[in-house]
Length: 261
Ligand code: SF4
Image: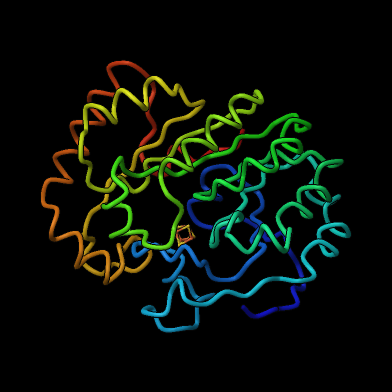
């Protein structure tokens, strides 16, 4: 792992995050060791490394907490998205505590906080989220099958660990959303539908997973495109799940689901 010295830690929101109503983003790390094969972050200009290396490198903004302590007042009570081009709860976060340090710096200033993660480590910070006036933690759980998860997100945490983090945070009274984004192939769509409904997340977001023919920014990535060909049923599964879920509750689709608490 490398270290970088960050000049700033809160950046003006851009793209779909800005369109969703966020003013700021925060990324404690550069790169992401979860290395999802479809990750849009690998296509962004910040990534100057070859696409095939995505997931194999990481840089920590080692001065992130100092910078956050100095600059947190400027984003007081404004909508903040944590994180847009990395995951704030990577395994290294357990040792470095950058995300936690940033949250502690932000707490007195109470931005409207959305935490977006695949990392069950997020449950560690429930004590901080409980002190927030407006916060939502979004956990990404894109399939019901860990074997499929390993095909597309080989280094991301096991699905059941994410469900456990969901329950732990909910048990503490924290608003938690579920993001089936992008929806990967499912093994038992009906059981997954029931589980999503029974979980009753604060916000439920679905997004389809398709080969966008190399369109940068919305692309699924070369590895994901290749692997997706083995699952022709995914489009039909997506349409059916969305339709059935909508009989019972509000489901946001894609960008529409990413809005501040
Ligand atoms: S966890 Fe998020 S940022 Fe990290 S590789 Fe996966 S999609 Fe990209």
